[in-house]
Image (cartoon, rainbow, N blue to C red; front, side, top):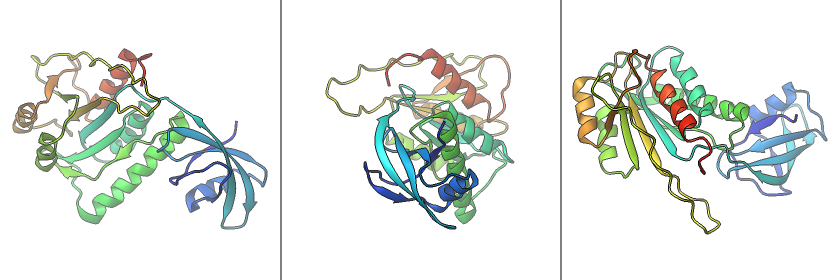
Length: 257
């Protein structure tokens, strides 16, 4: 099976492309040669592209693109996971698994109880690191899209932005025993015109270690988030949103995206 690599660039059939440094190193590590086949995807156009190595030097790899092949392994919803980013390497694993399970975007949050507190260049460096993990996860799992990792925001600023934005469905994962186990929203019928439909959006909010504070959860509910519980057990900060996302993927399996 040809190797599959993510290259963030516009593609065109029969075009020649010099691979960026990271992808070129990958090709060289795999000991590919001129004439070797591979598959490229850019994460934007929903397709896998056949490609052939045409030239290699010590520092460059050039390929010629073939024809695109549409790939649809997406959920029938565009799911944004807004999470109080867990500390240590838990966020790395969270990003990887969220991409594998089909998340469209991840919004890291700085909450009252957050252990991981980043700002400025340190926050941007982490975002780039997590974006690289998402791209690698898409290479492995066969998605033609890459989960978008957004810049970390303080919870109040992010929630203020949510108030002015339309989302089809909003849930906040809650410890509240009275919270409802929400059913997945219905998927609208796809348009008859041959265009890329806009997927209905879901925003899932989950707290950091220790969960959201009472004030944060009340503010989310006032903003239109519905409290949702995942059962009687207390799940870790990085486990709860993934459990919800896996549940959604199973519940909506077979629905058109």
